[in-house]
Image (cartoon, rainbow, N blue to C red):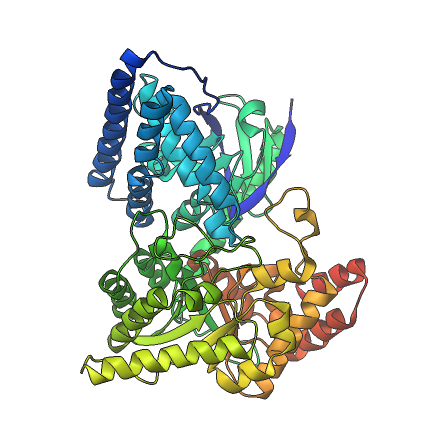
Length: 574
């Protein structure tokens, strides 16, 4: 019987193939108290499992297939860091020793505590790193249960194969050789999950957040995966198969055509130049940025360097990472965002903890509260500035006081470097993110004191509408087309253009084709998005005429009826 599932589309494309189900370890573990004379044996059992897991991940990294995406090394390093984190390994061992509990229960207890802390992050990317913690613990539990290796045998049936899993880690994807799968489906995950990032890097259609796909789909079921709409059709009839095979051929042809646009200038039909840049999370992403013809890096999320580790990255480590990106991009601009971390108690060296991370000590607030950490990053950034075209972006600024304090710290760092004869560029542009409604409404001071602006639409929408888009109970209310959101976007873009201050959008709206012409019509001339979205966005730009779309965009801005707004948007994209 044919039926349809709906999830979150995170990597576009159309795939048709047979389902290959991947089992997952249940994290429901029993709790029992050990006799005192068996505690040492249980400690040894846990230590052996930890070492076996470490060996397994290290071997995977050393034997990574050549065709695997560069991101895999960073993901495996991240899992190794989680494994080494004292809140997992050391704390679990101590719990077994002190409470005489079984190893599985100790691991599960420590994992739950870490997951709770990650869920408190306001930043969606950081919040979803809880999945990595779960995947590492799941791997250890598998070994404790006598089943080393986390992945079942590869599919034996011939033809295209769709990977169907409750969740899947980057290490699993390496073992499963993801290049053999035409699509990936998971019950869990979000737009910034590692599964999503890997799928986009592989240009593999992927739908996540399906909830019950692993239960409803049977092994070898015929599947159609629409990575554009987030639709999965199970056991389609002949007519449906024929229709989607045609769409699949058309999609493949379009992808081939898009590659021809790599070196083309992103100009509208009336000759207006549009800058299309890329968002990255790690230095290894530079290859994909260049492969897709980006005009630069519009957002490098430096907080990735700080994640899941016992120690903090020092000035030298940060310097090397920033230099690698700048050198890799040559003369093209690279915008590095200072770390956007929340009030995480595991951030050693940050002694102050906010009670509400969503509205508390995060991003620039944390930087200013912990000047030693911020100073190390600024020194690394300015030292790296001589190796390329650097721009520094400051997140979550809300007003004049934070801007002034930040600029004062930057001036102090530059003076120190110059006094010590350490090479640096003193004129590095400093910009601010507009992601708080107060910043958008009090834009004057930002325009006066900063060199450029970047609109973080993800947070701006969430803060404006008071909606967490990752919360399934309210995520349907997350609406980029809400009149209040559009009014703020138009105000920021218009004010910056009037003052001749460069402004870009680096949130998810920048890479969504449905909004490209709308943003162009509101006056935006610089976009930054995931590298995989660049060529399709460039094609949309090349087929847009500002004289035609600007009046429609203004009509959308004046509308307050959601149905009318959608109707006008459809006309804009026709």
